[in-house]
Image 1 (cartoon, rainbow, N blue to C red):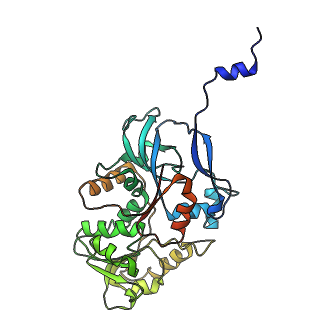
Image 2 (cartoon, helix red, strand yellow):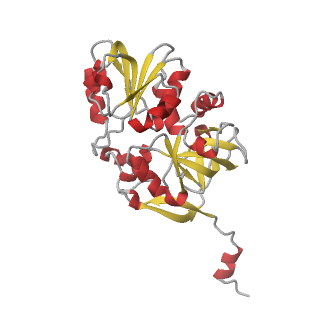
Image 3 (cartoon, rainbow, N blue to C red):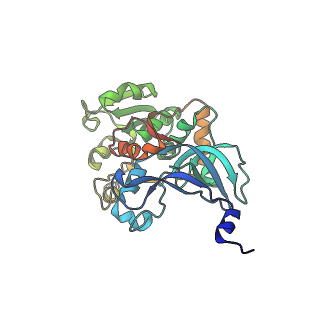
Length: 336
């Protein structure tokens, strides 16, 4: 008896599919589509995660728009190389690939994965850590990028220093205030009127409402400034430092669609080339040991993620648009 193609197909295992938020071209949140796609395959050194929640970052909004333009050779020229959006992730290990030794099926994890706005995502074992036991999946998903940016930006801060966090109510800022306090610094947070009490509740010793006062025009000088907003000139920030103070600029500067903050950083290199004041740049490292260090602070009660809003996966476009507006307090999270 002849075997028909349909009979052969019936003998094949059905391909597993999942829901994912996809993007084929650059643009506004309107370019995002929720689709059924094939399950990701787990490879050597990788972990397949059943996603429970995914954090939303300004970087997700930037990649959606292909900003800055100079970065498109990295993102993908005609559209993003990685069609599924999202990186910050928290969930449960579904399976592990060859060579994985730190995780097994059923473990609760958080960290970074390409394409976390989906039912399942694949991550490198080296970019995951056990989920802090005192956090929900939503809180854990809010932590990786913003928490590690804050932790690594503040790595030179020591006890007794005067630290100012500009944009203290944002995703990075809410972590930065708490981490600086945990290091024994005297912390000043800068935010809008509606966020004053929030920033104070995070442990800030002083809170400046930028709608009423300009910290660069006041008499106070700071040993360390973390600037998450880029709403002051570098000259203004420099003169607000102590004679040996340090500035870490972290604002995206996506108003410049071609170069974002690159031009500002080049200007800063020249401005800080003379004298004892310093401007430090860094690229965040999403490594397991850094995630573990952050998790230790969280489990010790020194740091707690702040969540502004949560959205279901079907409303991922609205979540990214909200973050792109630049006024979120704490983190925005997508639940899966």
